[in-house]
Image 1 (cartoon, rainbow, N blue to C red):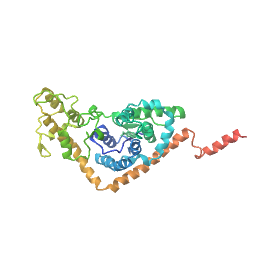
Image 2 (tube, rainbow, N blue to C red):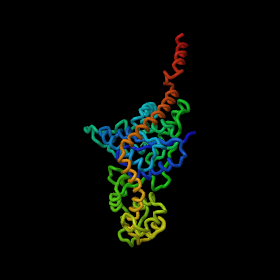
Image 3 (tube, rainbow, N blue to C red):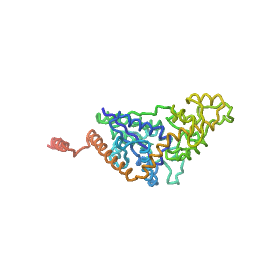
Image 4 (cartoon, rainbow, N blue to C red):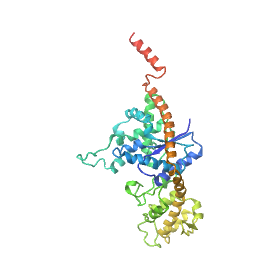
Length: 380
Ligand code: TRP
């Protein structure tokens, strides 16, 4: 069976380093591994609109931002199909049929949707406020996500941990569909990040999640200076007051970021100069750094300077590529236009399979004759 990847992001802002370690970096590796027959990367504008109905301009503007972030991270249109969800109308048709296979009660149990509803305050606005309540489209987005995944016959969905409930829901829909209508849809597997620090990167303030609304993000498109300033202000161990004090590594955001970003070569590279700053770091592995921090005698400033160097080392090539693509916006739209066209052809094929399985393909070649024969029999 063909190995196919589908994944994507909502275009509600530029992508940040949480997206990078949680998903983007892996996607590029998977793309370049040559192990996959097809890779689809979707900008989920229709999903973004489920809680931004009154702000389509935000979604529209961020399509290009996300596309620029994709290309600058190394997603290559020659190897991966980059497309815009709303341009593949077959997805909404699939969603409509899948709606019948899912109960309201099941959706209500989805922990990610629950949490998102709470974060957006959909439940606690008063009734006089016409924004009160959860938009139906938002509540049902796990079903539309099942359409996204199955439309492309995806076998592998590389996503962050918060998306696990969506993949679970998708698997249930696939199971149910195939049981009721016959083997049609492909069962997808989730592919989580392999480094546990990357499962969910905390914000720079130490809060559980990096999120634009919390203002605790480091964006892929941030300048080196912006990154340095954000690292300087990062949350560390509140009990580590003096350099000589023993410090905690667990729950220390600076170390979580190092776990996610630091590679062995960084130790060779940053004993010396970086961004004009001497980082003179006399360690040879992250374990050594951690041991010293735990024991005491290693200051936060030192560790932050190292993290700053490591982060900027990772982000600089991405920034440089972004600047190139920013000069050629027509090319970026052309990539998305072509990708959307390709994606649409694939989704149309699956939709035809689905309609055939559900026997709602009345006018398909051959089917009509059969229908007429069947009815002729009945009305003889
Ligand atoms: N829900 C994903 C996010 O929040 C975006 C998304 C939409 C997606 N459809 C998908 C991810 C299908 C993986 C597969 O970013």
